[in-house]
Length: 143
Length: 277
Image (cartoon, rainbow over the protein chains, first blue to last red):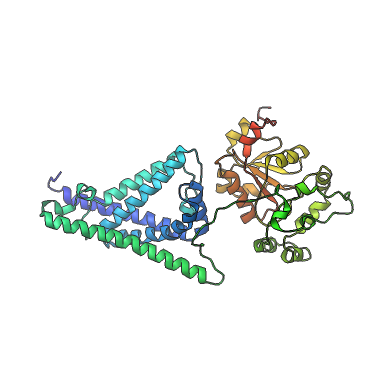
C-alpha cells in the first residue's frame, strides 16, 4: 500500500474528491437556503424525525453543508470537512434507503426544489457515489 | 479507531503520540465545522424571524393537520350560515344540511393574500378580507351561479368555501361528489397505477410529472367545481404535495385532499374504472 508514487497520487485523488464534494455541497446548501419551507416539508415527508425537531434540522442543515463545503473548497482543514461530508451523506443515504424500504416516494430535498428528484434507486446510487467521493476525500493529508 | 483505519496520510510512520494528537486535532476540526454551521443556522434564522415581514422557520414545527370539510362548523366557533356562499336567485333556497357544513377554520390571512394575488376583482374580495372566514370569493360567486353548483346544492352536497388553504375530505363526501360529478377528481399517482384502476371520473395528473412540468396543471379546468386530489392513501404524500402546488403556485380554489385515497376507496367496495374499460 505504500508503494513509491502512491502517496502523492492518493493526495491528488483525495484533493480532487474534496473539491467535487465541496462544489456539490455548496450547490445543495444554497438551493436549500433559498426555500427553507420546502426543505422542512421534505424532511417531514421522510417521516423519520419527530415533527417538533424537523424545523431545527431544516434550519441548521444547509449551514453545516455550507461550512463543510467551504472547508473542502478553500482547503481549510479539508480532511475534517471530508469526514463531516461523509457523515452527512451517510445520514442522507440512510434516509433515502428507509424511504425506499417503506415504499415512500417523496421529493428528495437534496438540492432544494431547483432540481427536484424523487427518492428511489437512482437517488440511492447517486448518494452512494458522492459518499464514496467523500470517503476518498478523507484519505488526503491535513493541510 | 475508524479514523486511524482510514489512514492519516504521512502519519503512518509517526509515533503514537503524534497520531494521537492528529486524531484529537481532527475531532476538534470536525466539531468546529459542525458547530459553526449550527451557530450560523441559528443566527440566520433568528435574523430572518426578526425581519419585517418575518421569513424564518418557527423553531418548533407543529404537526400539520388539515381541517376537514366533514367536521362540524362549531369546531371553528363560526356560525354555520357564515360558511355558506350566497345563493343565486336561480338556485332553490336549500342550504346544505348542518351536518355537511364545512369546517372552514379560523381566520386565515393568506386567504385574502391569495385572492389578491390571483387578481380577483376588488368588488368581491372585501368579503374575503373582512369576514372571519370568507363566505365567498369572486370565483365562488360565479360558482354559485353555475348549473353545476346548483345541482350540487340540490343533491345535498356540502358547500366548499374558499378558505385559501387545503382542506381534507372523507370518503362519504367524496362518494357524494363522485356520484353527482360535482367535483374535479384528480389522481396524483403515476400513470401506471391510474391505468390499473381509478375513481370514476378522475383525471390523471401524476405528481412526479407535475413537478417536472407544472404546465400540466394549467390544463385542468374544474369548471367552478371543487377539486379533490387523491393518491394511494395510507402513507402516500403525492396528493398533499400536488394539492399544495395547485394552491400555492396556481392559486386554485377549493382544493380538497382525500387522504384515504384509492386504497380506502377500493376497500369500501366503490366502483373502479380501468383504462381498458
